Amino acid sequence: MPPPLQSSPYFPMDNPTILSLLHPTPGEKHKSSSNGGGLLRMFKLFPMLTSGCKMGKPRRKPFLNHTAATCTIFGYRKGRVFLAIQADPNCVPMFVIELPMLTSVLQKEMESDMVRIALESETKTHKKKLLEEFVWAVYCNGRKMGYSIRKKHLCDDELHVTQLLRGVSTGAGVLPTLNHKESSDGELTYMRARFERVVGSKDSEALHMINPDGAPGPELSIFFLRSY
Figure 1 (cartoon, helix red, strand yellow):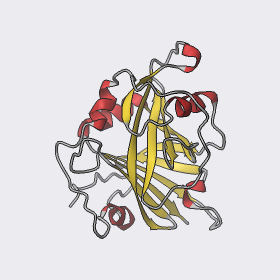
Figure 2 (cartoon, rainbow, N blue to C red):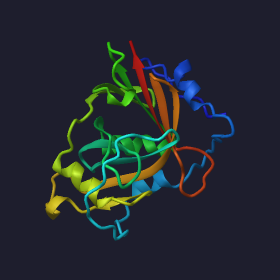
Figure 3 (cartoon, rainbow, N blue to C red):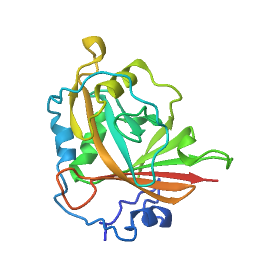
């Protein structure tokens, strides 16, 4: 049984839709742990990238499979955080959004070793798939952070991160900036992991981080909800 969700006046994180996405699917279990795995702690330390991955043009494969996805959280130390979702590390991201929160704020939330990010879309149409929606309200551990718009096209910095991390399935560290230019926002940091995908309905799904060190439970979960 997962630990209790943090509720707030802004968003009922313990609502039935969220809870249903936390329940383990048949044959699978999400065990909780007070210690958690090590990837979030790696993200706090930001070790230098030494993977030796090569730059190259990612292949396009815009659709996620039914069970897993690769997620990357990146941004400058003093800037805002970006979230990119792709089918695998060699694909162009099919979902990229700039979250309305600073890297320092996310780091502070990570001190609890359990981070839950919820994105809610208030749409009036049934024609789009859930992750094709553009406008999202963003919550972190129950607190409303603001609104974001999904990007239609990647900017140079986002393409740079995608190309530099091509083929990297899991890791956390500091990346060289585009053209090695210095930024007033500090170092360009990233965390990438494989996530289990749980689909509740056409209007709800979740991504639960798979800990690379075998720790018993997801440290980071991302929820997508659509209300009418």
